[in-house]
Structures are given as C-alpha cells and as structure tokens.
Length: 348
Image (cartoon, rainbow, N blue to C red; front, side, top):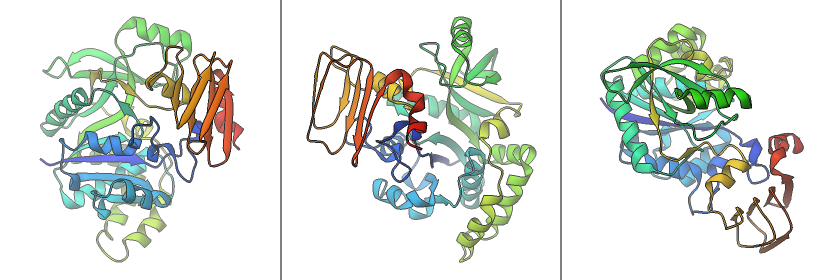
C-alpha cells in the first residue's frame, strides 16, 4: 500500500497580522527566522515517509504560484487549487478522489501546513506507526498531543481505556470543543484528554466510505468532478462544482460520527502556532522572556514581548512588558499579548 501525504494550505492566518496577510499567509512565511517557511518544514518532515511524488498540497487558487516556488520538487499535478474556501471536509474529499484516481489502495496522512514540530524523529515514528495500523484496518487514527497546560485554544480528544492490540493506539471516546479555563484544568487533571492536532491517518477506502455515509452531497460532487480528471475540462468542472460543497470541517463531517477512531498520545514538541503568544512560547527567548525575529532588534527593560519585523533595519524598544510588536510592508502592530485574539478584528 502506497503512502501519500496531503498538506492543507488554504488558511489566511488572520491572527498573525501584519506578518500574515490574505495575499501571503503565515504558512508561506519564515515565522521562526530559521530560513524555512512553515509549509517547507511540513513537507520536509514527510520526506522519509513517502516519495515526493506522493506529497499533495491543497491550497487556494491564489497561492498556487507560491507553493510552486517554495516546494519546487512537488509535481505541479499534485498542487490542487480550490476555487473557493469550503473548509477541511471538501478539501480532504478532493484530495482523496485525486489520489484514488492514481492509487486505489493509498494510505494517507492529512496534515495542516502551519504547525510546528520540534522532535521530528519522534513525529515520524508516530506517523509511521499510524500508517502501519491503517494499512491493515478500516480504522481512522487522529494524532493527539499530551497536554502540558490547561490550554483553551485547542480542541480536545477524550481517550477510552480500550486499545487496538498496541498499547500506544487507543480508542477515541469523544471529541470536545475548545473549553473554558476551568474545563481545561479538569481535562488536564483527568489524564485521558489530549490536544487535537488536526493530523489524520487513514486509507483511501476508509475515508471515502466515511464521506459517502456522512456527507453524501460532497461525495456526489467529487464523483462528478472526477469524471473530468486528467482531461481538458477538469479545471472548468472544478470551478463549477466545488463551490457547491457544504462548508464544513472534517471534524463535524466525519470524525464526530465515525465509529472506529483511534489516537496515538504523542509528545514531539507540537504547536499549531495559531497566535503571537504561541510563537513567543516556541521561539528562542532571551533571559527576560522576549522572542524576536528580524534584523537588528534591541530591547531595554522589556519582558515577555514578541517582536517580528521584516523590512525595518533597526528596532529599539524600552520598558514594554507582554507586548506584540510586528511590522511588515509598511504596517505596524503594537498590541498587548492578552488582547491578541482581537487582532483579526483590528485589521477589518
């Protein structure tokens, strides 16, 4: 059974403005100042898992050229351009039907393009274990992260005590939405709750069957688009039919209804890098807890700040505590970290 990887890269990263914009969102940016964008690091993590010709990127039509530039080894035919944003269920369905047109027995990993993984070797070990499991079963594996704090920004996976013959692979009881602080503390104390990383592993037959059962209208759209695969009318069929799909996440469409879902509780230094606060937590910091990415950034009597600049030659800050300072293309943001959830509203 061939391994394939689907990288979902259509988001706009609105909470990372002004670094991330709808024209050039965060998955294509060197967020950590390490010389590689988040999508480049994501693709690199899977190089030992499958050949590059089995790596697929689903993205917005406006980002196709960026993907081609940043991931030049991926075949152009593997870059799937969505003509409209329809959330993750149609995205995954489209990629699944395309993969099946080439390989009916594919084993598939689906991953976001913009997460951070610090321990890449452990990540690959977990993914390989999940692929081995799904290649021999009709089950789904969702990767769960052992929580290190009562985080309110992530969804949670509640694990049962049942395992799949391997003590590392445990049955999922339920999925839980992002909790309030007290509920998150209870989850942490219970010990059987994991952060939902949004990384899924399944074989193509399994996810096709689940989509047909739970969102048959989306499956029907994909069946019709598939009649044009490889022909001159494929792009026109996609543009006409794909926007007809319901706008729904794979969690709501499939994961909350599927009967045979397992997870592998994992620790590999994961973060979804969904906010400036998470960037500060994961970036290299000075002795005062400040994280900075940019050319010449000097901080005096500053604590707990995150600074990200792209075009300024020198930045000097004094006396700030727990602030975001971000600059790109003539736009400047100065915001308290505690108010970072308001950033997407500030730029409306």
